[in-house]
Length: 633
Image (cartoon, rainbow, N blue to C red; front, side, top):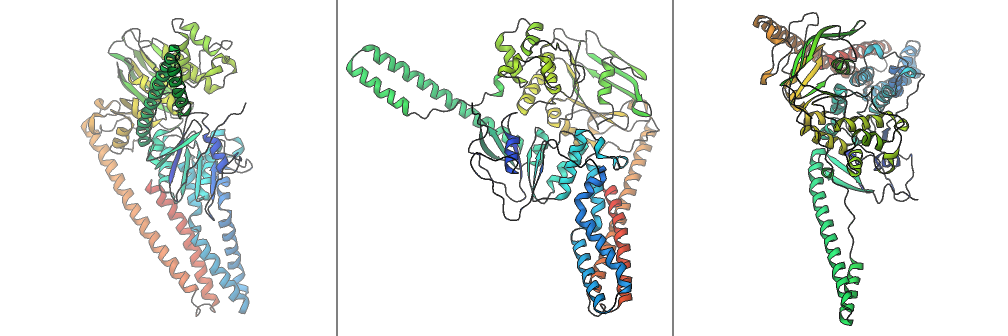
């Protein structure tokens, strides 16, 4: 049976435009990208690029050369500059022994090469490679690691770095944020916003799409519709269009049923005149342009989370909790409380200890020191991506129905559909599911439980946008307490009342959602002295650092003074660095002008001196560019 995935898809991308393609899982988004880049052939239609426009594509499993190190793999993109630099050095070496016409030819060649090298930003290519690697979350210690030992996610990050350094006219990215932490995603957002080219993105990261996209192309029921604006603009317009489409469909269906009833009634009269009128109405029905049934509205499916009993007001109290693995300290003297009804999100870089905290709270790991206690009547419902309590031989349907026999057949199917299991999926065995699919089943079961304190580890992983929104609505109407770890900033924005930022081995408290965290983060002093346990002062709006009540005003004042001094020093260093760069770049331009002067072209010793000075300037500039990048961060 033929399965039509895409039909009559039409859209265009302007120069410098940032567009996103959205749609449910299986809608054909990745298929469309593969057709655009030529990896698949369409059954009909054409994909046309403007003349001389280049295109770069990052698939979800970006390939890398495993014989290279991480740094070498990205540096390979700059091979043309490496070759230019080698030819420049070769000219410099040949100049002292050349003379006459040969020297003239060497000097012309040298001038052309250095001009091409400078025009391609050759003096900064190494710092550019370093900047991209650091932006994507690689540390300098990892630069020399072999690409062969990298995980799939790390290889995808390397492939993304290579694509960004190639700087094609059109970048096409398929789920680029899947393997990035929050800092790397923020860096990528800034990079793409300032990118001098067009971008097409497929992503389920709605916050990312809100920041990047100026056009949304929706794939729905094999058709494409373009919307101006970012994801939030699209969501509003889409809901209006969906409501209008549903109303039009329902009105037409009512009219069809009414006409069919009238036709049946006229025929029942068994009179010639009545039969002719019935036939006339039938012809009108046959000519009617029947509207397709709109995609089922997300709001038609509801997940209700109802705790069986209410907990006490104090749900969780954590005091002086510390945890290390060998020499790797994750967090130290962690102290915080969670009250009934709060929704608290734990955020932080990969590897800082967020999941470890959840495991300690669920007594799957011991803490090194400190303690925690649960409040009165607290019952935990835990979603852990590594410990799914499922029965391998059961089908998905039986997994739910056996534990919740009061649910109807339709209710179970609706629940599983909310987590992307439809049709024959419900009769698959648990053992035959992928890890991500098992995670979705576990999350579905958790939503049906009677716990009054949900602890969730990355609950939106493997969910498409519609399923995320169902989960968000469920949590927002939940009367219990929620503590979760997530990298999904849009999800955090919609569901969190409070954020605990795990940074510098401490939990920093922000009384708001993710936007509030971004607004206040810079007011919280960043330079925590890791050897000192004295917390920093609370930011505006009632936020606080852990154990702030135990620190005196003098310690807070000293911390503020130290941070202000550090900021002033950094700003002064930045100005000096910029001034030095400007001076050297000016001198470099002067040397280029001198070397192009015919009166100097015959002075071999002068040219050699200028070439040597320019080489020194190039090395110094490269170091200054790296220094400026570090200071600017």
